[in-house]
Every structure is written in C-alpha cells, then in structure tokens.
Length: 325
Image 1 (tube, rainbow, N blue to C red):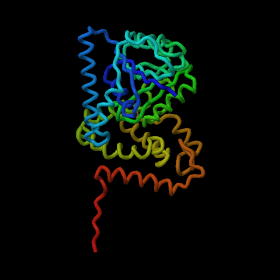
Image 2 (tube, rainbow, N blue to C red):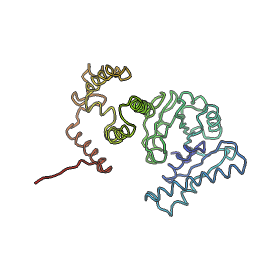
Image 3 (cartoon, one colour):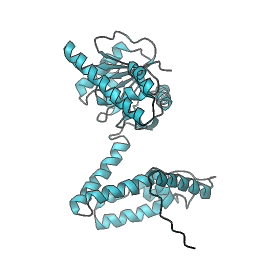
Image 4 (spheres, helix red, strand yellow):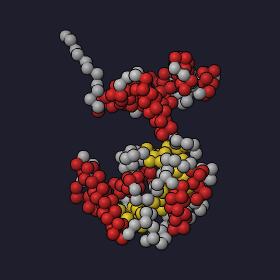
C-alpha cells in the first residue's frame, strides 16, 4: 500500500488534508509551489506549522489527542518547495490541492508526473475541473482521479471520488483503502459538474435564499428548520432512502403541487414517473431506489428510529414527556 503521502499545494486545503493523515499517524510531505524568497518561505512555513499547532491544541482541549503527542505529530509534517524534491521513491499517494487555475494545476500535475513513480496514485482535490479535463495533464492517466474533500478536511469524514474514463479500478480501490484507513468515508461518482454534495447544496442554498427574498420566513427560522428538520432527518435517512420511505408517488404529487403553485424548478425527474409506472415506489412495493426484498421492514424502521432518537438525545432535542398519575 502507499507508503508516502504527498500533498501538492501548501494552502489551507492542503494543510487540512495533511492534518488528516497526521492524526492517523502518517508522515506527510507538503510541497509548496508558490515562488518565494528564502525569508518569505521560512516565514510561511512557520505560519503553517503554527496553524497546525493551533488545530492540534484544539483537538487536545477536546480530549481527542494527548498533549504529549502534539510535538511528535508536528514532526510528521515536512514542508518543502518543489525544487527540493528530486524523486519520491516507492509507491505513494499524491493529492493535488493547488489553486483553481488551469495553468497552476497543469504545473503541479506535470511535476507529479516527473517526480513520482508511475504507479503512484494522483488525485486532484479540485471543485471546479472535471477529472476528464485534468487527466490529460498526467502521465499514465489510469492512476488519476479527483478526490473532493469537504472543509474542514481533517474533521469532515466524506471524500467524493470522481473517476475518469481512463481511471483503472485498482487505483480507485487503492485510494478508497487509504481513505478508509484514516477514518474517511469515500463515495464514488462519475465525471459530472458539482460532484454529489456541491450539486445538492447549491440547489438547497439558492432555494433558502429565495425564500428569504420572497418573505416566506426569516433567515433565522429557515436555518433552524434546516438544522433540526432536514439536517436531523437526513443524518439518519439518505435522500433517496427517504423517498422510498415515504413513497415515490408522494414525491411525484408534491412536486406537481409545487410546480403548479410556484414554477417548474420543482418538476420531478423522469425516473420518479417511471418508478411509479413500474411499481417501484419504495417500501410499499418492496423496491424503489433500493431493493427491500428479504428485508424485515418492521425491524428496519425500528433501527432507523433508534438512530434518530440517539441524535435527538445528543442534541438535547428529545420530546418532552409528562407522566401524570
């Protein structure tokens, strides 16, 4: 498995990714591509180490790490400029976390192609470019993919991995293994604008802003509704699972109602209509976006309810119960 973890780009995302691996006991080489004088470089490196120390002390305050381990953790990070590295021996995993500028990405990926072993897995953390747009910048594109981390990278568990038409499964598997090994939860998507999370959240954020604009509710009340309504619900049931839970037909009719009262941005996709016609409406049919054949639905509902109650308890939102004798 990958012995060396390399992060190309010493910005905030690069630092967050480096910290994720440091917390898991891995040594990381953070490569700074920005031209700097020796004095500027040393000052910048000291700032980066200071930010790392601040994050580690915060985690220590929260009793996630022990104070006596902080100094050794800081030593797990080595920051160098792109001129100081000749060749990285052995297999490695490199994350490109450079600014969202094509020319800068090309510079970093060309550097990786020259200096890393041809078996090294290279993943761009871009949120702007499709994997198919960057793969041509890498030698041996079979080992290249995008890996979109969510901020803050060292705390958010999800990493969205997007593969290109040339990405070989063994490299995807290798990336997943490493990410899971440090406690991350990788998901796979094809080369599509917005990955999964940005595409969903842009729709949600725009609709929330539109409701403020229309005077539907205050910003404060909308955010409370998101936190204790959607947020709680979808931390237990995924969106597609929730459709199956309530029934695809319910979504279809609710969409038609909102289309009639508001506009066509609420129109349901063709797959919802097709699932209704094919009796794939979810729980009621035993199949929807997921297959429930052989599933004890009563027990399944209970498990989900148990998980929901745990979240309510954690957030001190359990229902008030008054017993009268």
